[in-house]
Length: 533
Image (cartoon, rainbow, N blue to C red; front, side, top):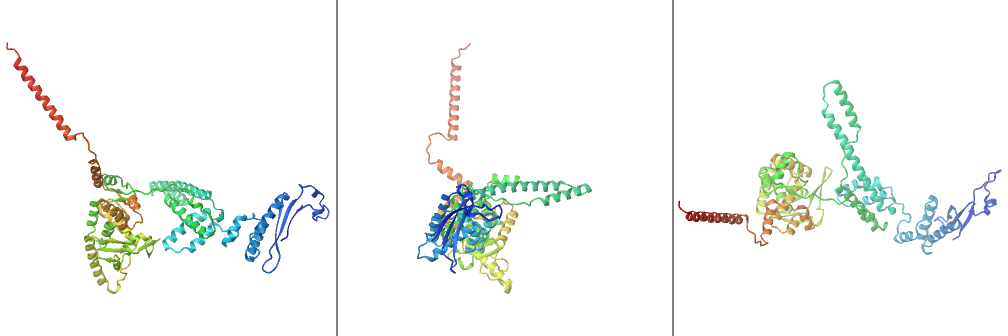
């Protein structure tokens, strides 16, 4: 196809105002005017002609380089590939109209072979929307993705072209999040100080009421209390973006995932601590928990279950405390998967809370599907619970909601996981025991099993973990007596020649007695040798 370069200027006749074109006397100078290119493109579907034109080159060499670039792009499609030729022609026509840079030849070749759009103008925000629309996962997972995209990813990097997203863009995004956290903390502190100061101003008196009014107006103008984006949330944002970009690679839209290479501060998961006597005494004095994750001792767990002996949902608290079921698993456990004759139950579902809405779902991972063995006492507890539930069914009559669930509300309907958590917190407060979360009963179950000498693999399978390292790293809290016994057993393995404290005291006492006896004998002997007067 024909293509050419030419030089032109924009000088005009001083009298007529018309362009001089090639008649300009200054064109004899190479520094005057600029170069332009024009390249014929394959015709449109209707047969009309089209071409690529661009002006403003300072030298013939630069103009010729772009003309060669265009011809190289046109040469990517074979002569027997009219569809490919049409795509390249449409791409060049659009690039020419928008005056955007010419596409890279090798990148265009790759896109053409993989059947992608030749112009990568898809933005990160557009791709995230497309990716989210195509996800087929449970509602709670979609909500988390949507929150990350709407609050963090689209506002900060959504405007970038997807194919030009770099690690530096993501580093800047997380730096901006950290800066916003500092600003939020400062604003929260200012608002909190103002609220506390307002609380000290009396209500009575004209001056006080006027002052309170001014202060309230100032507080209303302040930003509301907000939560910061913590390390765990930042990691989740990164994981969401990484997943979306991995799918873009799978569709051959991208060849590189910058989210896999951005570095964030590591997140330290809180270790579970046991409520020892010293920690309980400290909590009673200050009201502070030593760790977000606290575990009761066996005695404290027993005291709590005794306190709840007459509670309608005692069997659920008992099952979670001893067998470590998750809250959603306990709420969704059906009688059909509970075999009391075989002393086992099969975890095959869970209730998932999205906001305040609840839906039933399969376990999150394959390891969540599991058979949990039941001890004799737990079986008897569940049998008594079934008897009470049968009595409730008869009492409610036709108003009973038949869900087939192990644990239900008074009328047989589903238990709301959020309400179960609220109820547990009220029961703990009423018991007078140091506070733990409902999920901490699961930590306690793991601790009790490990303290009883149960193999960590069995504990991991009972809890539904995919890896025993999770059980060791997160759920294993060493009870004080277990740690003491382990220390004593370890010390006895090393033979030492030194005496014990008791033996050393006896040795010293014997030595002292022997010395006293020798002194008495010497004194007695000295008296015998003393001359008489």
